[in-house]
Length: 119
Image (cartoon, rainbow, N blue to C red; front, top):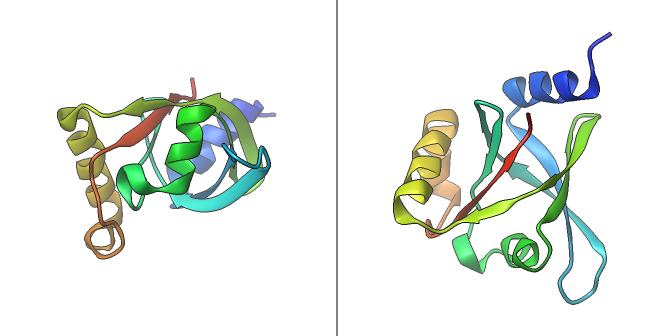
C-alpha cells in the first residue's frame, strides 16, 4: 500500500491541475481554486495567473499554510514566495514547458511565484 505522500507525488506527476485552498486574509475563510502547477524534484511550484495581483498569492503572503488536493490525495504545506526574477523566470519556463502556449494565453504578469517542498 503506497503512503499518502507517494500517492500525492504520483498524482502530481500525472495531473495538470490541483485544488489549492488558502485562508482569506480578510475573511479568515478557506478559499479553494483550481490551479496549474509544476512538480519537479519533490518541489511544487505555483505561478499566480495575475502575478502579485492574484488574490490567492496575496492570501499566502499573510498565511503561508495551504492545502492541496490532487484528485483525492492531499497535503497541508507551507509555501514560500519567490520574487527573485531569475527564480520566477525558472518557474515560468517550467510552466511553459508543461502547458505550452496556454501560459501566454492565460497568464498576464510574471513577477512572482511560490514553491513548497513535498518530500
